[in-house]
Length: 179
Image (cartoon, rainbow, N blue to C red):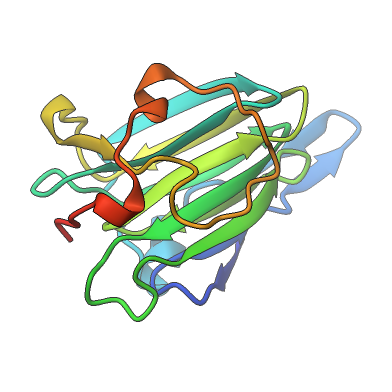
């Protein structure tokens, strides 16, 4: 089974899968709907993605706008990342606040990101592989983001490798949250 820890941002949880290890290798459970549902987390996943990134990459801060918003369950399967979640929900007591988790694949660790939060990460190892389960189908017109360096988070990378899209997201100060 895996362990779930709540955070100070409502709905954001960290997860760890100790799994089983023997001379053949390891085996880890990454999804168990009853356990997640008992913690109040949405388990209606519609799509699954996998990304591999090299050291120095920052991906984010991504989300989908309503009515295509989604929750995400993200696992680090290999390598290590600093995973960052930014609360964009106007009614949240933590609106505009970010929280970070150090995720690593040796003992798979992950995060649950509720609807209304932006997500991104910085790769700390030579390479990192992340698995994402999301609760809505990708809708390109609803795809959005916040510029990675605009909300006061102290990233562990000074000059990241960024996509053009991530370089040009609006900054948090001018962002009008749809959540």
